[in-house]
Amino acid sequence: MLSYRHEFHAGNYADVFKHLCQSLVLQQLTRKPKPLTYLDSHSAAGRYNLASDMAQKTAEFVGGVDALLRASLHSTQAQGYLALVESLREQNQYPGSPAVAANLLRAEDRLVLMELHNTEINNLRDNMGGDPRVAIHHRDGFEGLLAVTPPTPARGLALIDPPYERTEEYQQVVKTLKALHQRWPVGVIALWYPLLAKKRNKAPAMIEAIAKNQPSSLYRAEIWVKSQPDELGMYGCGMAFINLPWQVDVQIESLMPELVQALGNQQGGCFSEWIIKPE
Ligand code: SAM
Image 1: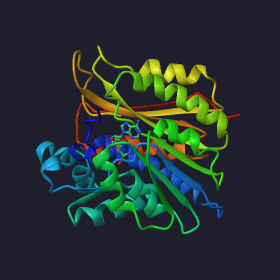
Image 2: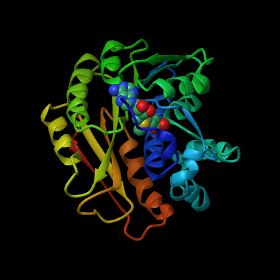
Image 3: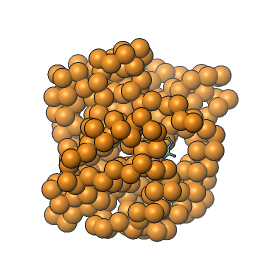
């Protein structure tokens, strides 16, 4: 039984960081006129009402998108994402990864959105259905990614953003990335992961296992908003990329300190590295 609902977390600092990175990759890919495919293995609802009981209960968006909009980033590459979130914020909404992608993609591009949760799939259909570029699949995203690749068009991005509610998901991510990269060597793969308390932080071992499978390149970027707790809780998050497009590392690195400052936390910080450099 799936219990995670993204609406509790919509627009928080982790969403902002993930969606900014996603935007930078898609902007770079759409500089070429050739069409592309966007795959989202864990789509959730696609768009969120920040006035809903769920969003208001945690109000995580206050420390995320609201802090960002108050600060306004200078990075020119962030402006597309900022314009989207600003216009939706006026309607008390925040875009999920499917809406961020749909906003940047062109008429000739395709979006394949997967979601397993029985309620969330209906929300996804309501929010993203009716767009001729979009196919929505009610299925396991790990299995779905392998079933639909290599896609047509062959250029593109797969975003993998599991809830990490079950420990096995870390292992599933490693296996799926390996198989997906083999099936689709030209695809850009972007993975979101949480940075957790010392006793529960499984991200370092997961990234090490991904590197051991020797993808053609591997880059990671992480931000945190407080110091690492010992026992419980998330203090930051990261994005790992296989086949990160040219120049996006530089864009992420110039954006991250500004973002940490915009989120306004003294204990915040950021880190990035090429674990495997492209040849
Ligand atoms: N990517 C979304 C965004 O940025 O707006 C948020 C995704 S949320 C973190 C994770 C979603 O994955 C949840 O909606 C959950 O129901 C869904 N999910 C959990 N396990 C799944 C699986 N095996 N396959 C597909 N979706 C799954």
